[in-house]
Length: 376
Image 1 (cartoon, rainbow, N blue to C red):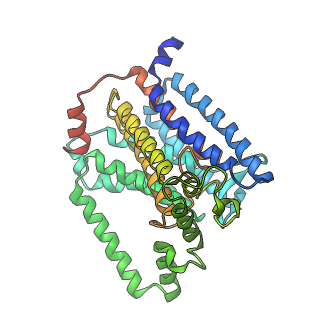
Image 2: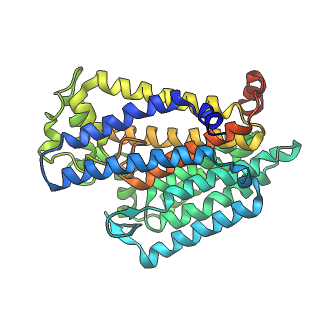
Image 3: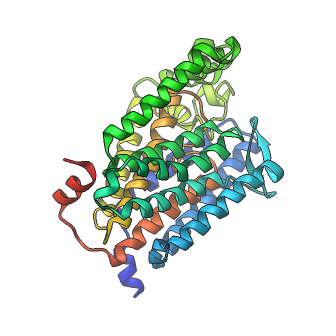
């Protein structure tokens, strides 16, 4: 039984993930010597071992019970209540009440809510029929996403709210919902925003939005972090400065090099070649996730795998984009590399559930899946 479960594990996926986690660890170890540096490295090492253990444990569990509506609704309501409790019991960090301080470590519940949202949307869209193209399914599925998005925006944590939105948008796009109806919704939203911009927003509100969209427009204020990050990435050039010789992180010019800007810290030391290797590894991870999703026994398992891929892609694109100064600074961690236990546990939980689904999987025709979910 155990040997059969081990055979179901995608060892190639694990092989692609491990170098990414090691890259994060080595980057943290290369920071300027100090108490915080040692704590980052040692704690992250512990979280990696715990997360890998969770991944293997979850791989042995039969998660077909997650297809039950009552269980998914319970999980959704539970984590919605937990997000509400943050306003009373949460610990403020960088201006947002997003964490529960548990002493030795902190816990960010929105990470697990992202996983719950993938599950509940997979369940909703798995009941596919002709009426899936009805515009009401955009609003009903959007309601599931809107509740946690509002609770997260009120913290305020715009980055996590953006990930929740992208999970919903991505799963809507692959579910078969009418693209015309979806376009109508977005055009309506754009018209409302334009009306507010010209007739409701005060000048200072417009300035805040402009600075958020283009942080490099104010490098001495809101754009300082993005500016220092682009300097770090650019100074790495082709081959990098070498492990432990990243001046931006060692001299503390680069803020939060262990979390938000771990990619910039890595790029400064390993250069374009090292950064390219990390991007290739991320692409291979996404490929293996989608490959595993293609073996889903039903729409629920396939959609869950696609949702997990969207979850990772959203984090990767937004984090690296903000490290390059192309996207707003949102405080989104880079999967497997950034310091922190909450996001690492969630990532390996999601992969563990996906791996478990292969225990009762069947092969399906790849062309059928591409036509069913991608419309090609």
